[in-house]
Length: 148
View 1 (cartoon, one colour):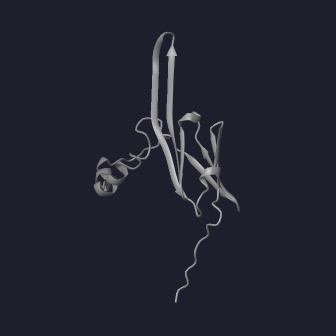
View 2 (cartoon, one colour; view 1 turned 180 degrees about the vertical axis):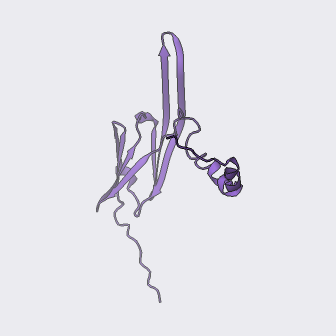
View 3 (tube, rainbow, N blue to C red; view 1 turned 60 degrees about the vertical axis):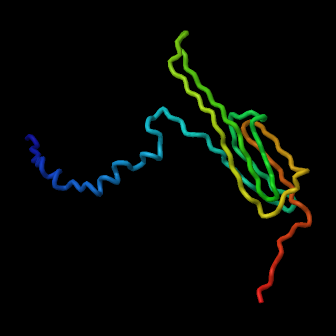
């Protein structure tokens, strides 16, 4: 026995609400790339640890040369930036089929609870991982103010 389905083409038009469906029309439009081949700008992921003597900052910056990383410390403000250069090229024989380039900068700035001794700070970069050791400045403590 055949299944018979009843269809009403005007039923869909009566359920259409232009104001509620308008929100869904552009949902996620600016969140992800318009086409699947697009790559988003790289981001720097940080991890900050603290002990009694120093702060240890670990930053993931893959595909960057040591010379392109810049670290600055001003009191308790730390800024890390890197110049990112990414090139990919797909060839078939002598003809270039696909080529993408990205040149840009990633940067992060943050403040620490205590000031940093800039003269003894150390940084190393291995396999895309930047590690910065920032010793705390001795004798700097938070001043407590009594409320009267």
